[in-house]
Image (cartoon, rainbow, N blue to C red; front, side):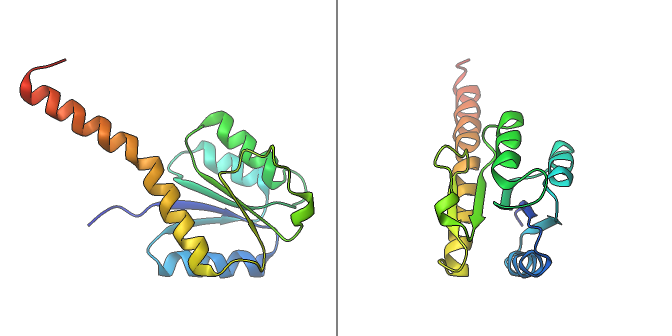
Length: 140
């Protein structure tokens, strides 16, 4: 049985947060849900987060600022930014994926999460296989 991946889900709208949490947990993900960017960043610093899924517009530390802070700490952690304000999306954001609220199906979000997690995990598997093979044949 493969270990559950942990998603940090952040949104100041409790209804949206609850909906995403239920959707992700029913697909086998572990979800840490928080309503403030500052809390999310502190939780991220504790470790064990595989992907960040955040709303863009939040009071205090907003989604793009949260993602920038996360990428500063862990550049390979995938991040998805969601917003209803498509025109305000900053193309300089460090988010790996931007989704407009109401413009994507839940299956699209789940597939993007899956692909980002596979991409994050990929190089480690290849590196592990390479080092295992190298040790088997006696190459450093």
